[in-house]
Amino acid sequence: MRDRILTAARAVVAERGAAVTLADIARRAETTTVTIHRHFGDRAGLLAAIGQESDAPGTRDRIIAAAARLFAANGVAGTTMERIAEDAGVSPPTLYWHFRGKDDITRALIGTFEAKIEGVIGRMASAPGAPGAWFGTFFRNAIATQLENVDLVRVMMTEVATKPDLADLVCRKIVLPNWSTLARAIDSQVAEGRFRPGPAMARVVALLGMVTYYSLVRRIFGDRIDLPPPNEVADEFQRMFLEGVTDGDRNR
Image (cartoon, rainbow, N blue to C red):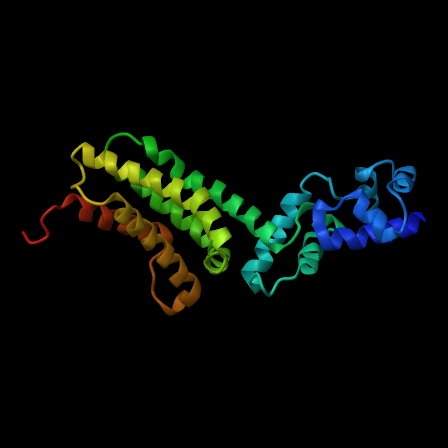
């Protein structure tokens, strides 16, 4: 009976992930929840028996890191849950204990992007004084972050574009808060007379567009195009942006 319960539990967890109940497993094993309690104590005891590493420290992060590597290399559609489990060094039941499927893992990856982007942009909302130094820091950090994650960013952009629920999540968690932070920093410079008036969100697109396109071109074409190194590009982007927003009459 114990082996039958374990076999049923593995199958149901693989199908349904963390939402599985003891009643689900009991039906599959053709037994009762009372019998499961007698052999395993409780739900946690049963899950521990089919995936001892499920609650080990760092397991969830290890799975996310493995998925990031595989998504970047093979795309989301080209990556199976079984391959993620293998790369993360966990059993399939453990994987499904943490994530019900690839969409759940994609949402977790969006959360890691959120933290990284906040680290780059978050300090700009209250940046005082002349913008030169902190725009330079922004460009250098943003380019470094993009280059580090460019393959995954490319794949995730494609994935989000085809799934409205993920697009809503990215917009709510990443785009709107961080773009608004940049827009406030730009508007504060307008208010202080350093920048000429203009639509802040258009300027945000210009900032991020330069960073993203440089990172993609560098990744796709590599040495085929003689691109300057990242820090040199960051300094040039800073000059281009600041000259563009501070000169009100381009015809003079």
